[in-house]
Length: 328
Image (cartoon, rainbow, N blue to C red; front, side, top):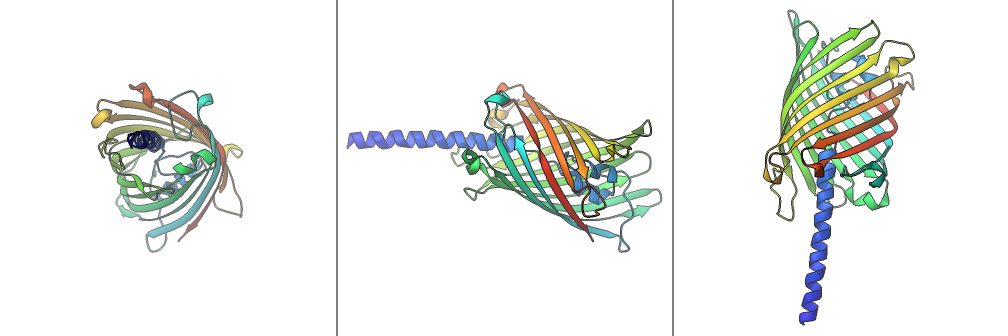
């Protein structure tokens, strides 16, 4: 009987250790996931075609001056985006790229939104509401257990008072749900404020720069009970620049650089500070007589440096995507 008890205890410890390792990997994947809204959504709100050209580069920029919409002064859109790409570090773990598990990925996103323009004197205000649902599949068999679906709902207001700057206030809700376990692994509210500035160099290079600050208030699923639910709460300060080119051949080329500083607050993450960089680019092709490029190639390199080296990582994405949008 004691021998059986001992064997059962050992097996229980092994299962617990394996579960804890998987939970660590899920949390690492959650922390590394880019949750910025894609340009295709924001461009529909802003009418800024220069950002449409960089659909492959994730960005949370918004508008320059909001444009006039349809006769009802309300605009709506619905879209579908599908991407197939290589990811060098799908779980965003620490270590050299060559030592990490690699995987192809296939993501499918359905997105929609509604907005309106309110004009007063030389000012314009654009309230908006957007939503998206993304199915994320790892095509590496060993990573199938980490497949997840992501939901985003964002509402806010863009304000333009003339000149080169647009100001925004918005709040985003994000949620990740495990496909394998049908559990809610992560959710957060992310209120933020900031401004977008647009300018042109040499009559050819257009630059849209966004600066923002916000507070991530999150909840993580912790079955083991060893981590506080708000472990991932953090203050984020970020800036990004989107570069587009006023040349026939380069008109569909977009480049983006994003830098982010995050300061964590709770549990074992107290006093943790991260600095992250993302360099991304894409080139779009127009199919089906669309108003904007809807087939695109994209690539991105991301790196995170933390004062705790355990959380350092780098990652490379490269692939192809197709984007379809209908406006109402």
